[in-house]
Structure formats: structure tokens, C-alpha cells
Amino acid sequence: MKIVTLLAQKGGTGKSTLSIHLAVLAAASNLKVVIADIDPQQSTTFWNERRASDAPDVIPMKANTLKKHIAELKRQGVDLLVIDTAPHSFEDSVIAAQLADFILIPTRPAILDLQAIGFSVEIVKNIDGKAAIVLNGCPFPGKNGERAIVSEAREALAGYGLPVSPAAVSLRAALSHSLINGEAVTEFDSNSKAADEIRGLMNWINQEANLW
Ligand SMILES: Nc1ncnc2c1ncn2[C@@H]1O[C@H](COP(=O)(O)OP(=O)(O)O)[C@@H](O)[C@H]1O
Ligand SMILES: [Mg+2]
Image 1 (tube, rainbow, N blue to C red):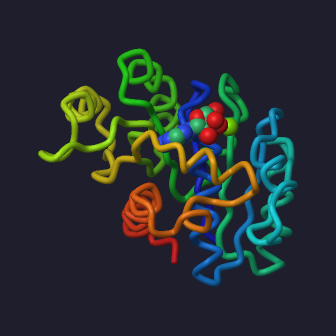
Image 2 (image 1 turned 90 degrees about the vertical axis):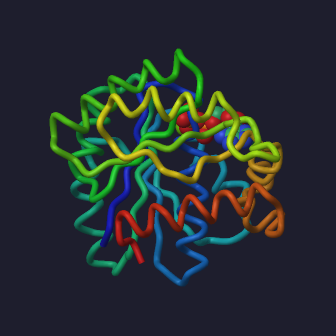
């Protein structure tokens, strides 16, 4: 079983959104997928309550029960566990990061967010985890490709010394609309640009982390 942890000490960067989208795409590839929702706000758990399909499964749990759950999920033959973490939860984030094969740190391409991910990068470095940063909520690319604010964000992020996904995710209404009915955008509007970007990101993650 592979474990991917979505980590960001700041709220609203896209941890839950990307957890859901990664888990749905993996489940669509016939993997047995579970999301461990360790955020007391339970965004992914509530999403699952609105969802018609029972894959991926979402299990709300406390960080200190992760190890016990992981042993059980391995016994059940789960292929991929995605851990959705809470912001401002240093100790829980450390536990979730330590258990991960791959840690994904989402950030918006804005200065306050770019500085705030220093805390998450520190967690990853302290445990010597395998990790990457992904830019989420970006302005859509123009005719000449990525916008300046996104390229500038990449330059700023280079200082953290972690890989940054070449695939960024734009701020697109379909991404949050799809969640209303418990879907992912790859189900809600599979031919949309939002779905293309999500598939691009997940392909890159899959290559980096060898998930399936
Ligand atoms: N790329 C995006 N495009 C549009 N809306 C987004 C995008 N990423 C996140 N959102 C929305 O922003 C809000 C915060 O995202 P969320 O995934 O809940 O962040 P976190 O889990 O890190 O707190 C949610 O309403 C979500 O639907
Ligand atoms: Mg969340």
C-alpha cells in the first residue's frame, strides 16, 4: 500500500480538493483507495456523504490512530491511502508526514502563501520525507503559457529545495462545483480544462511517487 499525505500548515491551499481528485483518479484506475480524513473540519468526509459512489472510501480518524488503521487497511488489500491533514496542526502533520511514501504540499502562488509553506517544508526536511510542492489556484495560462505570477512563484519556491510540479492547477469554478454533489471534476466535466490539469498533475505525481 502506498501512502500520500497532503500537507500545508495554511488553510485553503487545496489539501482536501487535491486529496479528493487524486483519490478519485486512482479509484478510476481500479485501485482500492481510501482517504484518511484527519482534519476535524472533515471536508472530505462531508464530500463523501454527498457522494453516490462508494469508491474511494473516506474514513475520518484522529492522527494518533493512523498507524492502527494503516495496519488494518493493508490487511484489507488497500492499494493507496491518501491522508488529508488539517492546517495549524503541527504534531498531527508530523505523524501523517512520517507515514507517507510521498508528501504533496499545495500552495497558492501568492507571497503570503509562499512564505507560509516554510513551516511545511521544515516538517518534511526534519523527517527526511520525499515531497513535492504543487501550485494550486493559479490564474489560467494565457496564449504564451504560464502567467508571470506563477513563474515568479516557481522562482521563489526554488529556495526551498524541493521539486515543484511542472503541472500547476488553475483556479477554475468546475473544480469546486464538482465537489457539491460529491464528485471530482474528472467525473463532473471530464472534457474540461480543469479535468485536464488535474490529470496532468496526477500523472506527474504518479511518476514521481510510483503510485500505480
Ligand atoms: N484550483 C481550484 N480552483 C477552484 N477552487 C479551488 C481550487 N482549489 C481549491 N479550491 C476551493 O478553495 C477552497 C479551499 O480549498 P480546500 O481544498 O478546502 O483547502 P484546504 O483543504 O487546504 O483547506 C474550497 O472551497 C475549494 O473548493
Ligand atoms: Mg481541508
